[in-house]
Length: 364
Ligand code: GDP
Image 1 (tube, protein in one colour):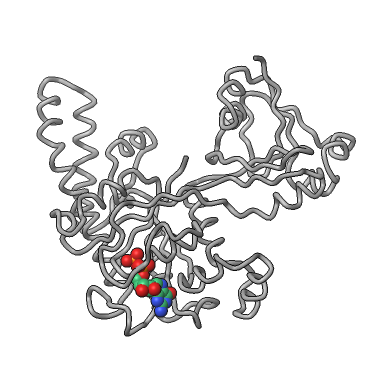
Image 2: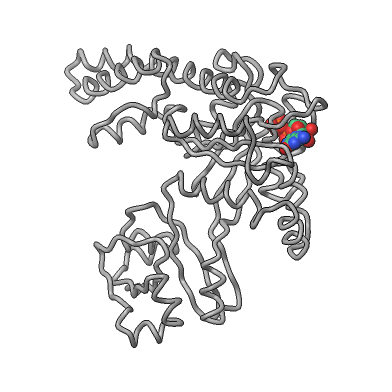
């Protein structure tokens, strides 16, 4: 599955957010640095109101959302790239994630210690980003001697890699993250193989005070401006509120949200934006037993999509009976869509669209 790593300085609210996301007390929140020692991993349901609409039409007994994995990664301090604090472990855990949810403290609270003494989200972001860039610099510099040796032996691939690594190094030395490197399409695979921490897509999660949960505050506005400049994403959330909402029964959640001016938990935005950031889309299978959401990457063709359900579906793929989400809803289900000529038979080259309702035909 796809993994989103939750990172940030100590005491910014990572564990509180992770707990709310997973609704467990597994990751203990406490008011001191280094409380989070092991990475905590949680599978989170991706909220999607389309599932409710589909199941209502088909009379499905069960709704099964698709899931996204969040990893709460141990706190980072200045010097982590040199092995300080839980630095090395932290960096290793990020390497295994597909995207980064960077929690930034945007709340003032004299009772909660800030590691650098004051709330300054842009400075906090710089601290984390600097450590990640230093780690990337080091890992690239280590690669050069081996690559040069291979290049001297006439290895053409190694020569190309040196060129790529040199460009990435120049960018990082200039204080810029590797994700800003301009790549030719044929370089993308080799670039991904480098596994650079600053090449991963970033979502800034602005953890604001309760009163700012709806519209954010001055701190979060600065983070949004930065995100826009660097092509990253940002969301506002109050981890403290989310952790309270998460444990309420569903009925009470609605009233609570209304009272503070929200239409849904802020966490839904975090999850959906993370999903989006990873380039993920959803298709559905719908029947009387269940309405179910499945995750694929943008651009996946029908056999690959089928393979998410079962490898046999991909191997023996014949065709996909396909109904666009809007057609399924407007025409009130499969029979209506079929009568209106909106049920398409798609083959191996079909690129699945977000929201497609699919039924696979395959050979065993
Ligand atoms: P972590 O070190 O980043 O995982 O931070 P924690 O989630 O353990 O939170 C550190 C402290 O900040 C705890 O005492 C939390 O209760 C507190 N905290 C977290 N989020 C908020 C928030 O939105 N508002 C306030 N006032 N306190 C918060």
